Amino acid sequence: MPGRKNLLTSEVFSLLIIPVIVLGGVAILLGAGRPSTWAQSREDCSACHEDVVKAFQRTSHHKENCIACHQGAEKHLQEGTKESIFSFTPDQKSAAKNKVCLSCHHAEAGFFAASSHGRSGLDCTACHAVHSVPENRANLAIKTCASCHEDILAEFNLNERHRLREGILTCTSCHDPHKPSTGQQLAGFKQQTCLQCHVEKGGPYLYEHGANQVEGCTACHVPHGSPNRHLLAQQSVADLCFSCHTQAPAWHSRFTSMITNCTTCHVAIHGSNLSRLFLK
Image 1: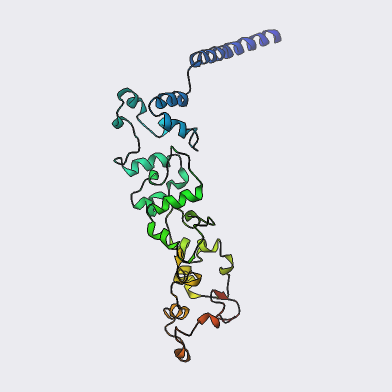
Image 2: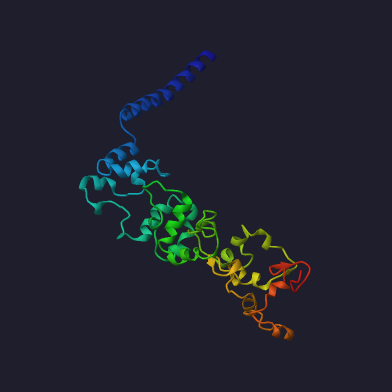
């Protein structure tokens, strides 16, 4: 009986494994000599778009298939018309183009529609060149942003400025182009973006400058560039302070913007743990 049991087990195993081996061999034979989808697509596309395909192989998307982004490729090969393939042309809707990109770039998918770029109707290709090899990332970001924000780039030519042109930082050091620009990021409560570099201004303080709790750094400072020292919004420190502190003590009335610098006395202007008047 044990011998017959072993024989039955061998027969059952053979019945199960033989079809698997046969099917596997057939699959190998059918697939032999057939190029992969990417290889076939590359050859088909390069017949007309040779320069684009060569450049694309050096980009971060080089492992992707052309048809992953360009739907309608089969019809395009048959008809040879631009209208038969999704090609990210200006006449195609921004939402349709963004949908293709965000189908892979999930991290930005939930935020881009609410960003200033998304709300302005821009699509990903307005800033990103998918088929070409990007240059230095810092230079690329500056050039890309400046193509729309020329007025902002001009502020970086002023004598007091953040060191953008020197390459110390770039636009994306402070701005996330794919997410909403909230007051909490660029100013507002705890002004997180500014404090990434200016850590010493963040406290915590027992006595905190009231502007920090409302408008944040931008209440007094211009973020991109200014003709005034310390990127101040006004040339006169007294005028800047009096623009908020209109109810100064009466004996301050003899101080004028021409001769007064409030921070001569109020030295700890960002915050203090010793004086509620920021005297030390």
